[in-house]
Amino acid sequence: MKRIKQLIQQKYQGNALEKGQSIVLIALMMVAIVAFVGIAVDVGFIFARGSQLQSAIDSAALAGVVELTDWSIANTASEADARTKSGQFLNANNMPVSVTLSINDSGNTNVIKTPLGATEYAVTATWPVETYFLKVIGFDEPINLTRSATAAVFSLAEIYVSRRVEDGVLSTSNQGIFGPNACTHMGDPYSPVVINPADPPHTYTYRIYIPPDYAHDIVRVELFDPDSMNVAANTFNVNRSSIAINNGLGAVASKTCGTNGGNSSRTEPCLLRTDELNLVTGAPNLDLDQVNPYWFVRIDENRIRNAANGSSCGTPGSYSTAANTQTRYSLSYFAQNADGTVVKVPLVDYFGQTGDGVRDNGGHLTDMRWVSPGADEPFSTVDDPGVAVPATARTIDSFEIDLRTDVPNIVTDLSTGARYIYLDVQAMSGASENGFEIWAGPASYVNSVPSEVNARNLHVLNNPGSHSSDGVTIYGLGNLPMNSNFDNPVDIPLLYVSPEMIGQTINISMFDSDSGAQPPVIFYFDSIAFTPANTSLGYNPAQTDWAMAFGVSGQPDPDGVTTRCRPGSCPTQWVNPPYAITVPGDLSECNYNSPTMADCTPFFGGRLVVRYDGGFSDTYGWQITIEGLPYLVK
Image (cartoon, rainbow, N blue to C red; front, side):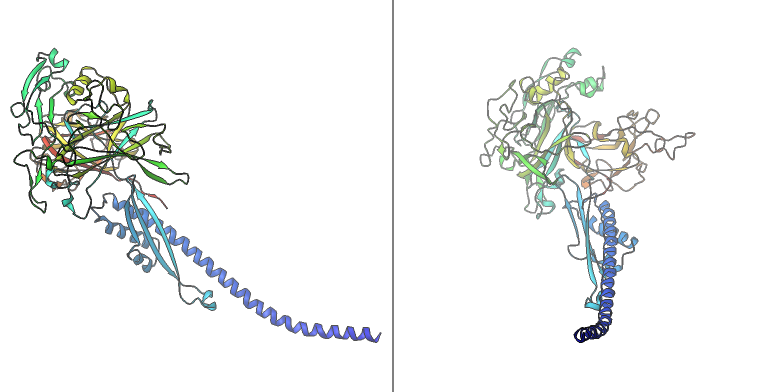
């Protein structure tokens, strides 16, 4: 019993001691709990600030990228406007001044042009966030929160490459670029390196649209006259179209360059007049596309640079093959990887020839012919000259693309089912102008439609519907180098405008509208009534529901600008500011008691067309941008 009593006494004594220790432990635990609660509060505060900063930087990127619709490697002036706009949106989102200023730090903004043609704008900002409880455990300095956002905008318009892009007929215009050793005053604003010797020559990019209902496995891409060689001969027998013969013109006529059109010098283009245009300007007043106005002999311009600094370019005293321009034509497509990323995949290249015996000897015989390099039948079997035209293989070796095997994982538009092939055209060497054209469609016509340009023009004219692209359409992305072959007003389709664009602004500029061009420049939609007229306005207002005429003598332009140069007086410069075309169809301000074109014209979609007299053999460039909606990339 005594032993048990001792044990009980010891137990009570131990409990008393433990009660004293508990008070200490509880006090220590209270400190720890307060510390943990403090850390949780600070961490939650930091996360909240991070979310606030991310939301603000997203808004800043979206706002800034809108200022970059005209951005390019050669034109970076708008980057400052983008930073300013981003800063304004950071301020509007209650960001401290330190956050706004941080976007000006080196590397905190970046602009790139993606392979697909979108402009991406990345913004990074830092917010030094003060803590409260974390200072107790040694975090005396603010926590620097850094967040980034990338926004993009696609502002490049898809410009139709030709009035006759469907049937591949060549008449009033063609594409044309100059070599890197040329001067920009020749009419090409990008290819000559004298813009900025540090920049590489510009690449013109074309997008080949393949409709979802395209019923063929092969897309045959054809290039017209991809070389820059000119023939020396000047006299030819010109064959006339069936409609011209039926209206009294002889079937054949002998024509000579210089006397009957163009220039007799091999350094210059020569398009012979067929006299069929008389059937348009006079009785029976046929439509221009019903006749064959020209017989094509030469379309390239032989040019040299006279001074080392590129300030003086001109025509050589005699034809110089050393000055001929070599042009690279590169096909590619965009493939989607399993992780969702998109990559550009090269397909095949072709280098146009110069015939100088150094770069090449001109043995492909592509002058004045349509050709599909690398194809089993590069020319039509109707008039095949019997030579091979090899292409430079990348992933395939031909300009005939098999959609089943040649373009795995090609990006497909989920909303329409459309697919795209891309063609990059770049002048590699020389100073001359290389005139060319592009057509794409089924390969089935290789056995029925000629390759030689004049034979093809007549075949398609005499056999309507005999040569169709089956919906394949070629567009220039944002920029289009043009060579005018006509000295009368021509209606040129520029781009399709959907009804969703009602109220949006389309900005259109031209480069190097020389003295051969004549005002006005008239924009209209082919889905809205328009009637041209031989007046200073260029159209009949009483029979026109909507149009915008720029450069009309004695009156301001319809967008209110009075200072831009008039067509024919803009050598070596862009029309600036660009022509601002507001898409009609916003009827909210319409007064039906006093309707006007500006505010009472419904719009259901259509092609925007320009009526323009570019003059004969004048090279110039179109540039079109659309104020697209920005979107977040990441």
